Length: 417
Image (cartoon, rainbow, N blue to C red; front, side, top):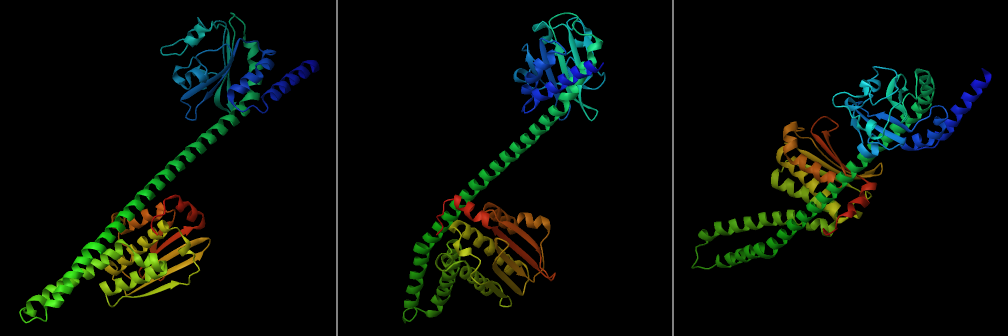
């Protein structure tokens, strides 16, 4: 008995040494084939591994090549496997002297053609188990009739127990790798879409600014010339000033409105004087246009680093703040608005806070300007949050652009400055 135990231990250790360092199922089965043949002779050896949902099975083989191998047929439904009862845990082993005539291996829909094609007769199958759960099978086959008997089942179980935990680890590693690849692919697609949308936004911004320049150079110039002509006509005795005065006022009103449109389309203050001055100009214009009761406070000590951002990023932030200020002035019934431009926790932060009527309903937020602001922020990699203001009266809008995103935003063509 001691000699028998020593021999068995040596065989076990030789199998363990053979699988150590193997990185895939096929490499494992090939590495142990010679060691296993000393225990159980075989012409064909394979491990079948169940999919995560246990509905599919893939086989990895060595020795005779068959259509069962994953390189040939990939995953197959468990329902079509000749050893489906074993994989489902209905039996704890299968032994046959001749699989070609054994009805257990041949049923309606069974993928048993490889048994005939490879000339397999004797077959021995035991489950691969981890924590009592079947994860696959270990199968031995020869081209001779009557090679295996029930007495070989225990030896096959020993080999299966050695392989099971190692194969399970490989399976989990492969699943983790596939999840990581899917995650990377999803992130790459999202980044591609972000960059594409950012380019499109920039092109729209360029077109918007080009229209603003055309309006300034042509339409505004024409209206200004008409206004001057009307002013020259007013003192003449042949012209009744009362008739021309309303027309002149309408023209001058159009000129003022057109200047606002042009400045919105092509924010010259942003380009020439910087972000802080541009925001202050927005605040002053909104106060004048909407309500003399609305006052504001701008906090910008110049230490945020926002002026160093690429032009396309700066314009996007400007448009978000512009939308926020306009929303407050027109819809929030606020008496005060604060805009703070700061740097904290490695991010450039802009906060727009008012004491108005609070957040709109969720459905309105999705359809309105908040959705547009969220989209603009995501395109440049900034976070965007809208919450009730700290004192519970009104709304706080916060945009944060991490330092890590300031370089990424330069991927897009910078044509805005």
